[in-house]
Image (cartoon, rainbow, N blue to C red; front, side, top):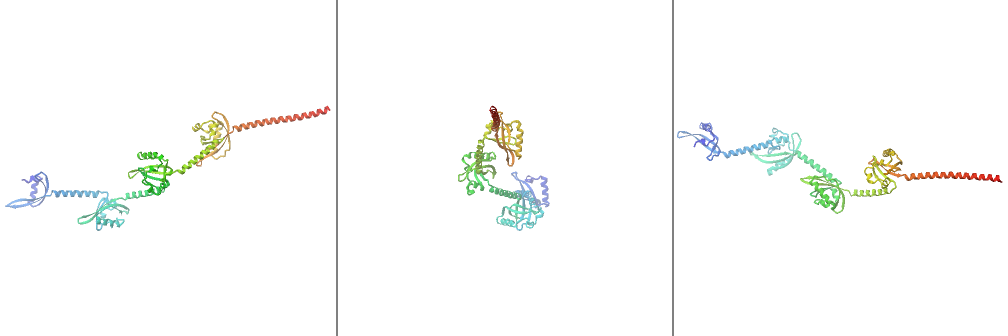
Length: 487
C-alpha cells in the first residue's frame, strides 16, 4: 500500500518529510492518517533510517494521539473560557496562597473593586495591603476553607486603595495548583446594595414608629385577613394584644348593615387600582360594641400580593357633638321661627343665606325663590339701596351702626317701613357678612299717626273748651251788668 493513501499530505509534502527522516534531521512528526473506514485520526510518528541487507529503509512507529489531541483541545478551550471569565467578570476574582494570603493573580474586577492594579498586588499579602477591615473575617474565611473546602456568601468589610470602606459578598474554594494550596475567591461589591438595605431598614423603622405612634387605628389586611394592627387599633377594637386580631376576617368587624358597601369598596380597590375616598360607617369591637368610624383604605403591593392599608378614626365623639349641634340649631331655629320679627343673615354681596319663617310670611316670598340667589337689596325701594349697601360695609368694617330705618318692598310691590339692627358675621376672624333683626314698623307708624290725630283732636277740643269757658264768663258779666241796669 502506498503511504500517500494513508497520509493526508500531498505526495511532495510526504517526500519532503521522509527526506528529513532519512537524513536524521528530524525523528518526530505529527500527521493525520486516514483509516480504512475513511475517518481521519491524529497520529504521532517516530521515524528514522534503517540499513537492512545492504539496503537503507525508513522505519516508522505510529501512535494514535486523537484522544490526547481532543483532550488537549478541550483543555485549551476550557482554559480559554476560564481566562475569558476571569478577565471579563465584573466581580473581583483573585487567587491567593492559602498559607499566607499572597496574591498570585487578580482580574480587572479586583481593580475596579479595590482600586489596586494587578502589578501592585501580585506577590503581596492582603494583610500587607491592609484590605481586610477586620482580620477576624480573614481568619473565619481560612478556617472554614480548611474545614469544608469552600465558603459561600461571606459578607466582609474591605478597605479600598483610597481608604474608603466597602462591603463585599465573597464565595471561595480551596484548590491545589502545581502542588500548592490556593484560595480561589469571587467577591461582589454589595456596598450600594447594603446602603440601600440599611436606608430601607431605617425607613421601615421610622415609618413603623410613626404607625405605632399614630392616634388613628391602622389595620393591614390581605384577602380580608388582618395581618397587622397598630396599638391604636387595639384600643379601638378593645383587643388586649395584636394576636387577638391577627388572622381575623376584617369583614367580621364591620357592622352587618355596612358590609355590602365595604365588600364593594374592597373589590374596586383590588381590581381597579381605585383609592376609596373617606367613608363613615360602623365597626364592632371584639366585645360587640358599635363604634362610629371614618375610614379610608389604600391598596398596596407587598411581596407580590395586594394588601389593603386601612386607617380608622373614632368619630363617636364627633357624631355626638354633631347631634348636639343639630339639636341646638333646631332649638334656636324654632325659637327664631317663633319670633314676630324677621331674623336674617346675608353675605357681603347681599345674597341672603338665612331667613326665619316670619320673613317669608311678611315679604311674600317662598324659601325656594330665596334659595335661587335672592339679593337683600331687591327687598327695598331703589332710593334706599345705596344707603343699605353703605351701612352693610360700615358694619363689617367695625363701624358703629345703630338702628336704621328703610322702606321695604313686599313681593306684590307694597312698600312698608322697617327698622334694622345688624352685627357683622365673622368666620375665622374675617368679616363674611351681617346678621340681624328686621322689625316691621307699619303698626308703629299707624300708631304714631293715630296718636297725632288724637293729639290734634285733643287740641281742638281744648280750644273749644277754652272758647266755651270764655263765652260763659262773658255771658255772666253781661248778666251782672243787665241786672244792675234793670235794678
